[in-house]
Length: 408
Ligand code: PLP
Image 1 (cartoon, rainbow, N blue to C red):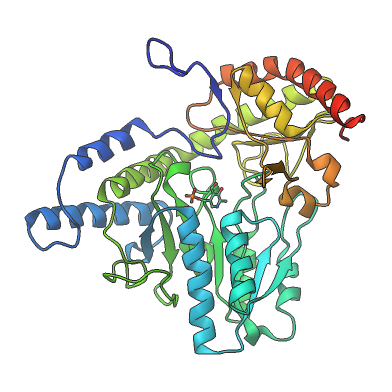
Image 2 (image 1 turned 180 degrees about the vertical axis):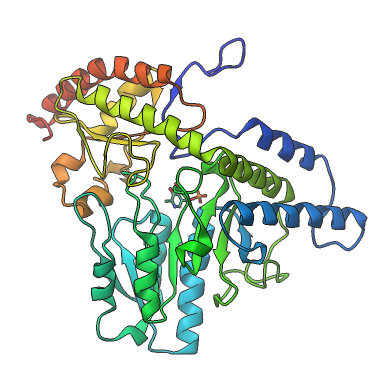
C-alpha cells in the first residue's frame, strides 16, 4: 500500500525479517547494475568489476573487524550458515574420522537447525544440543560440559550471536574461548547482530561468522561468511573456484556493492542508531505492558540496555490469544509484525525458541515479535499501541470461540 507520494500507508514493525534498503545502497546498486563486467574477466570491464568487489570486501571487513581475505561472499545468511557448518563438518571429519560431533544451541535459526538435522540424518553427525536459560542464553560452562571428556570427537561449536525471535545476545567471545581451549572451531550466526550491536570478528575469537545484506539495509540475496584464513571448508557447490575455492559462482557485483555501502553506513551510525532504537523499543514494551492485558516481555530486557538484548527487538506474550490471530488483526489495522513461530503443513507451531526457554506450548502460542529498524519512528510505536487493544480483544474472543478456553 502506497499513498500518492509513494510513502507506505502501513506501519512496518518487522525489520527482523527484512529492513528497507538504505537510499545510498539502492543508488550504489542501481549504478552498478547499469555496468557490464564479470569480476573474473581479464579485460577492462572485468577488472573494473573486480575492483568494486575488492573495495566492497575491504569496506565490509573494516566495518566488522575482519581482514579482507576473511570475507567470502555468498547469497545470504542461509548459504553462509550451510557453508560454515557442512563445510567445516566435512573438512574436520576428512582430517580425522572421529570428529562427528556438533555442539549447537537449541535456539538457532532454521538455517542452522535444519542444516544440522541434515548432517545428523545423512552424514552420521552426532548432535549435542546446548540448552539455554529462561532468557535464551547459552552459558559458556554449558559448552564446556558438552565438550566433555572427548574433545577430539567435536567437529564444530555453533552458537548464534543474537537470537532472531527474542533478541537475546550470547556471550560469544567467552564461548569461543572455551572451545579454543580444546582447539575446536566455533561458528556464529551474526545475521541479526550486525548493524544493531558491536560485532568485531577478530576480537570475538570466532573462526566463522555468517552475515546477511538484507538485515542491515542492503539488498536481499547477498551475504558473507567470515572465515579465518586457517578455517578449512569443503565447498557445497563446485565450479570456477571463486572465493578462496570454497564458493564457486560469478559474483553479484551490484548486490555486493549495495551490501558494502549498507555495512559502511551501519558502522558509521551504529551508536546513535542503537540509542534511538533502545528508546523506541522501551517505549513499545512499556506501552504494551501498560495496555492492561497482562502482556509480558520475553528474553533479557533491561530498560535502557542495548547490549543484552537487541536494541530493536520487542518480543511479547499476550495472554489469552493466538499470536497468528493477533498478527492478522494488526495487519488489517495497518501494523505489520511477526510471531516468530513457524508453520508446518499449514499448522502453526509454537516457537522452538520459546519452548527451549522453558515456556509451555500453550503460552508460547501468544507470542508477537515487533522489530524496529532505521525507518522506525515514535509514531510507528504509537500506532501499534493504539491498534493493540482492539486486536487483543478480538483475538481473545476468537480464542475462546475456537477452543473454549483462552491461551495462558
Ligand atoms: N540467521 C538468522 C538469525 C536470521 O534471522 C536469518 C533470516 O531471517 C537467517 C539466518 C537467514 O538469512 P538470509 O535470509 O539472508 O538467508
